[in-house]
Amino acid sequence: MGKKKVINYMLSEFGYIVKKDVIKQYIDYNGKISSLTLEKYNFLTPTGLLLDEWVDDIKLKVVDDKYCIFSINIREKYGVFNKTGDIIVPLIYDEITYDKDNIFIAKSQDKYGFVTPNGQLTPIVFYEIKPFFETVAAVKYRSKWGYISKYAKMDNPNDDREYQIKPQYEAANNFIDGEAIVVLNGEEIKIDRNNNIIKNKVKTKHQ
Image (cartoon, rainbow, N blue to C red):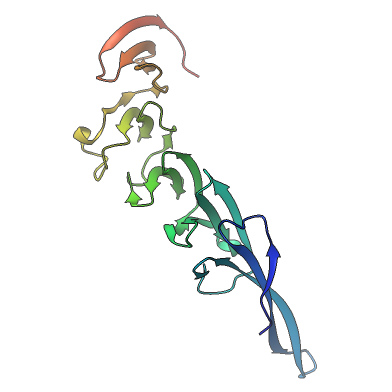
């Protein structure tokens, strides 16, 4: 085992990427013992090493100045840790992006959901989702779009009561000033947050 060496100073508020050389022995084609030097990486936080094992590669992205999205090796799984070195979103997701207000959009097996430092806000079951606007987000469950609230944890996506507006639309846009344009039966209509129709619009082919 080699000595640890700091190789990246760009994330000094969170810690540093560190590298060490690992000597691996093997039997070559001539039956002789040979050695190979491998570079391994970890992340040194204020409270110690982030990972239990040294890895071949580590990628990091700071968001909102207080979280760091990371992935390791060829697993291509993503998680999130904070400035004290605590992993607040486990390293199990295929993709993670930061929305806002301590909420992350997570992808797993081609489905999406929302996660927070306190756990999943929703199951990872939606075919498409949009970021939160005015505390609600448009989500596509199966073939229909609806809306969820950032203040209500969802446990069962099949329970219409857990939605701000249950999935029923062919398309849905973000709420702006309390109004959103949705598509129902090929017609664009404008609704409020209580799903009341504010204005009917001409029929249009939704793209």
